[in-house]
Image (cartoon, rainbow over all chains, first blue to last red; front, side, top):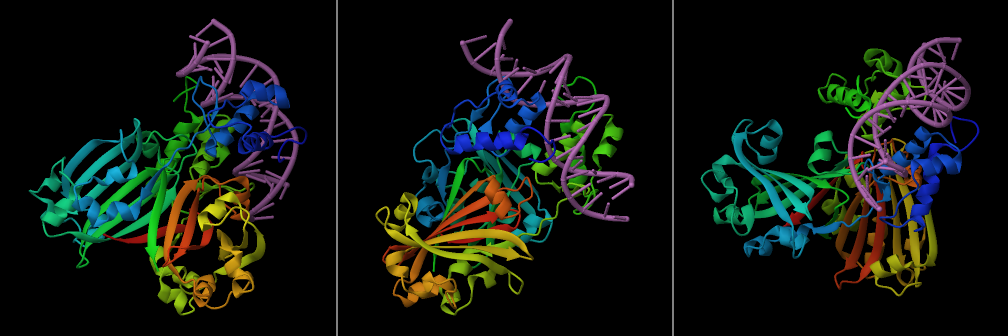
Length: 250
Length: 250
DNA sequence: CAGTGGTCTAGACCACGAT
DNA sequence: TCGTGGTCTAGACCACTGG
């Protein structure tokens, strides 16, 4: 207890609620005591009660919307198997990679945008181009049960993608990797870089993130057997929706 | 601007500061306007100014300590190459895996604790044991420049580890994987599960995390060529200190 | 429309860091 | 010691949800 001498502080109150959640006394989806409840129970002012609830929310333990009671947060992440997703057998057979993650169902791709532009220095470096060399940019979002869980932006060298289905919104069965294979640029090796941070305002909005939810940034580079980079894909994922799974051979 | 009708809200103030940081006007390490500055500049009360600064801090953009001015946060993550780390050549030659990450330097392992206990159901499931079967638990923390960046807890079946260097604090050159190989249980396959969330209070303390810093939870399972799990390692990483790097073959 | 979360102020006091 | 962040209150008003 720092600050005020006598009485409970908002961190102490938050701690009590935290442990009630951890113990299962307050299960997922359950209402948490309201500000009024806390004011009465601990003899604190409204702002202090609010701060206690805010702490929980910022730690990702609860969700709160104006007007509605604060509730214990539910998690139901999906598992993303990087190796299975990226095996040639998957995209070779026309299976959308997406099907691997979310076996059956209502997952939807939205907001597909394909544009052509000059490469930034970052993208140029990743694709081993000279800066400014044109690239095709494909951006899209993935929805699960109506909730956006992933935003992805791919860049491919225009000299490969121009005039092919890769430069079309719908790339056909197997997606861009199958098309790259058709064109003699079959990806053989992938690298994924994983970073984590709190989202920007825009990311919060685009992914409809609750407070206290970090994002995972995955930057994937696909290369041919000759080592030529043919695609770089920057994914921004809702960390509450994903468990990443990687397999590694010794 | 929600809430109060007239004037700037704390989110608006935070946004202004955010963009000043993003634009580079306030570079890493630079002082951010103080509460008093903000009160005067925007004509708001102290609590409102405080909330603006708090938001930035909770978004991981700044660091603040009592007494000292709030400053723009510095990031200097290290890159962790999962595949290189786990290649048999590395631990086969007695190179500590740690050397791969942080080539030269002052990285230190501390708080090594080795105990023997009954397996929890989670650990038993991961190692393919019956629940309660004894396991050796090895926990340690890694410090970089005095800052803890990783806490790791490994579990190995006691029937393998008992009476071997694996049950000693110092496992010798090449670490536990080299010892497992000595014992005829050389790991051939690894799986890493990656989760992300905000840290618990304990994790905040153990890793000395600034506010607004998520943790990355990596659970690695090591298996022999026969598919027998021989180790499960739960790592809790400071997300501001790490970039994970995975390689995948198509 | 009652209850809940969210914002705001003015004033106060405390803890800590740098000087 | 002074300035900074951190905590707290009492009272007020607003925005939204749910029954």
